Amino acid sequence: MTEQTPVKDKAATAVTLPDAQTVTSVRHYTDRLFAFRCTRPQSLRFRSGEFVMIGLMGDNGRPLLRAYSIASPSWDEELEFYSIKVPDGPLTSKLQHVQPGDQIILRPKPVGTLVHDALLPGKRLWMFSTGTGFAPFASLLRDPETWEKYDEVVITHTCREVAELTYGREIVEALRDDELIGELVEGKLKYYPTTTREESPKMGRITTLIESGEVFADLGIPPLDPAVDRAMVCGSLAFNLDIKALLEKAGLREGANSDPAEFVVEKAFVGDGV
Ligand SMILES: Cc1cc2nc3c(=O)[nH]c(=O)nc-3n(C[C@H](O)[C@H](O)[C@H](O)COP(=O)(O)OP(=O)(O)OC[C@H]3O[C@@H](n4cnc5c(N)ncnc54)[C@H](O)[C@@H]3O)c2cc1C
Image (cartoon, rainbow, N blue to C red):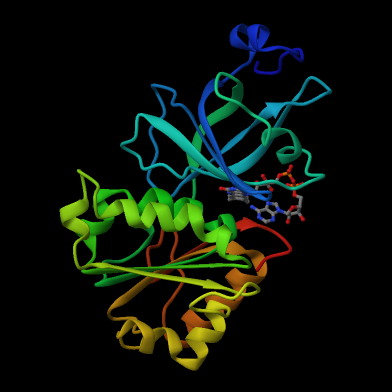
């Protein structure tokens, strides 16, 4: 039995919320994006790249939960989430106001396909993301396993505006100084941020840049090859379908936990993508 009566203040939430975790820090990036960290249940084990259900108690006294990729790596003592703020969104219209000390609900049942186990061994790993679809890669990029498994890792992140790239850019930049994986990352990481609306050094949808061959020319690497390349994809439904078609055209096959292959896909949200 997990449903509880609604609680109106912090003192009450501290003792009554089921699966409660305490928010430890919050950072706002834009009026549409924020990230927060919270305590991690001692019993929670997950594979970097997986998602869980998190949320808040709704006004009707029932938990209001949504799927969220865990953005922190599996070794981290805390959990991190990177979130959209949907103005009228049932959850995020409230979640965007959380403060350190507040409690959130976390169902400790991690699942997902953006995991190393769902890919066959390869030489180069592509991570294709739009918007908050960067979140599972924020986890995987900080996991030593990613760097032990691959000779090269390419992370692409496409957003409408430059400021929306900040969360991802800071994670990528911090990797090289990371005590745990700094040395492993050396010489293996290629970061490819693009914007679709605001002017930036590289503009355009990643799908267009793949089709034109521009991304390969820019990075100095050959076109996608199923013998070499593996891919993980996370963005809007439409983005995922477009990338999937391009990967399949190049001869890569979609994998799953039970049937590993050359690429895996997870949707970060349904509509209104980049
Ligand atoms: C497997 C999975 C993992 C997810 N991981 C994340 C995550 O790490 N971070 C995150 O912010 N969201 C993530 N989402 C989306 C999340 O579950 C919610 O939809 C989101 O938090 C908004 O909730 P809401 O109740 O405010 O609005 P909802 O009623 O859920 O959505 C309202 C509208 O906002 C759009 N929307 C929802 N989420 C996003 C988004 N992330 N970016 C752009 N538009 C969006 C929807 O398409 C919809 O049109 C994930 C979804 C799935 C299926």
